Length: 195
Ligand SMILES: Cc1cc2nc3c(=O)[nH]c(=O)nc-3n(C[C@H](O)[C@H](O)[C@H](O)COP(=O)(O)O)c2cc1C
View 1 (spheres, rainbow, N blue to C red):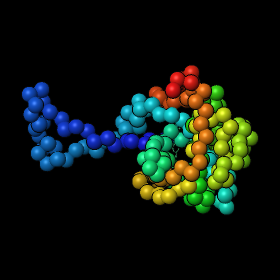
View 2 (view 1 turned 90 degrees about the vertical axis):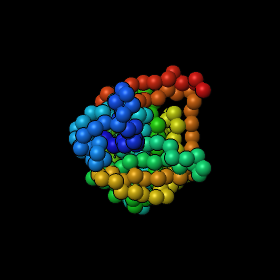
View 3 (view 1 turned 90 degrees about the horizontal axis):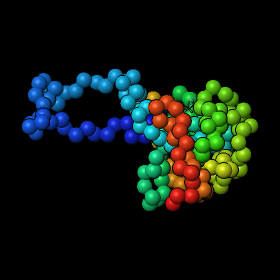
View 4 (view 1 turned 60 degrees about the horizontal axis):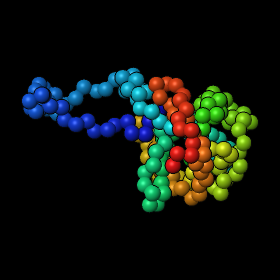
């Protein structure tokens, strides 16, 4: 799983007396590389909303569960999605150039598992109620919020493509709670309506 803000810049470490740490690393600025598993374990403590990101167009219909989604700016309204380059969905998203980010409610946990990998794309869409958004991407009826987007820029970082997406249309239902992934488990949040 990918995450949105994996590399916050750590504040320089200081001793209780406010002095910079000593030693070779401090003297040279070099740091030991962070182990991949340590990074993954720490990121499991960063709670994130669960979404199903969908697409449709010349490349076909596809969708996957994603927690690595966050807002970039509201002018123009833009969000980003981190997409694993090795996933079955990657080529389809690039071919279509559009996507819809569907945030999930507590009752969508099973749907999230279905879109979480390992099943053919057509099978994923047999569950849930979908309508066609303006871009052609599938929009989940009953999503707390859905953002219909066109992909404006793609930046490759390691195993993932970061897709910058301009929101061209949206739908929201303030009466619904949300679904969060934290500690490698799903959690329901909000009873809805608490604007
Ligand atoms: C809670 C959760 C969050 C996930 N977040 C992401 C994500 O942000 N980006 C991503 O590329 N894959 C994410 N995945 C994995 C994909 O949903 C999917 O399993 C992966 O792309 C492999 O799918 P495939 O079997 O179609 O190749 C997440 C899975 C789960 C269950």
